[in-house]
Image (cartoon, rainbow, N blue to C red; front, side, top):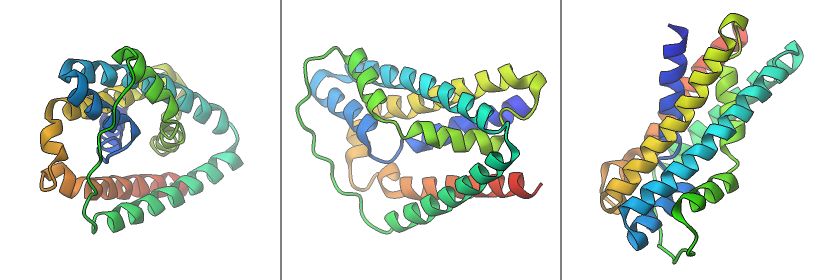
Length: 206
């Protein structure tokens, strides 16, 4: 089914997109170290709720952009270039050892609101999900528009929360230099970008 395809690809795209060390997952990790795993999970939940909003904005932007065939083709080609650049970037990064991220003190803001704030500061998911929505043609069929959009948004939020939840549970292992995620997360991302390149290429020419 179309909805299943959208859910699975979006879920894993969001899940893998949060694997490399960044603002949100490192905030979850720092909170776990300083305030315990429970608070770290609260931060993850807050940030994932923001992703829910960001994915909604992205899929609505895609809907209006794709009403114009010219803009649609330009966006697809731009997305193709972006995915190729990201694939090359992650392959290059995979050849270097991940640098250890130092944990700095956090403020006394409630964990759930800290998640909201950190998620709001991280604006990259919006263009990322716009390109992903375009590649998957989420708004391609009017009769399934609402269902497809809902599946896409939920998958984006759940995929993000899954990775952040794992960060909260297994930060000690993820932090270690020789762990599976630390060694291979960039290869995962490069593989994901290759899949998106293929999907976008098919969308452009077929």
